[in-house]
Image 1 (cartoon, rainbow, N blue to C red):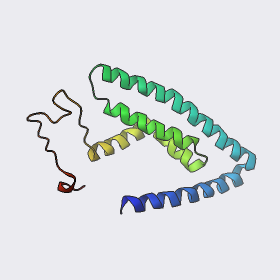
Image 2 (cartoon, rainbow, N blue to C red):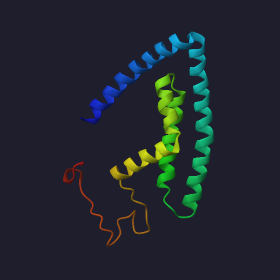
Image 3 (cartoon, one colour):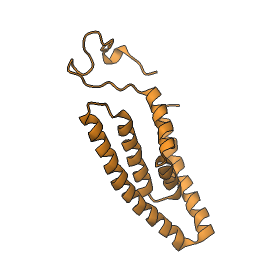
Image 4 (cartoon, one colour):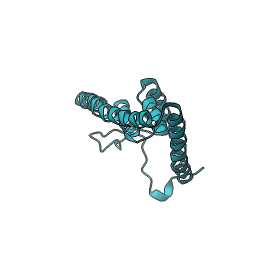
Length: 147
């Protein structure tokens, strides 16, 4: 399945799932508690973005100061930012996805998957990882294809 089709399906399915969740939660607890729950999770998302984001940025700065490539910390920061945005988005399904991204073992699984799909190349004094004997070959756009 192409990326375009997958995104189309996601953008079609998520609002439908959210509507279904609103109806089910609204029937179970009523209108006002349902709306209050949406506001509370939006506030929680803002707090999460601020607190965890600040802590992860400090960790990234510390690792870079030691000369390390903070790939894991950068991935965690990205996933926490996505979690915060999902919590800010009105809806119970997106809130659930956001809460799952805040669980470190879930982020670890996502990081492990992403690590198999991407290669991180660090900058070096020899020209951004393209030094003599690095085993890196530069290709033009028409000389490669994605996996």
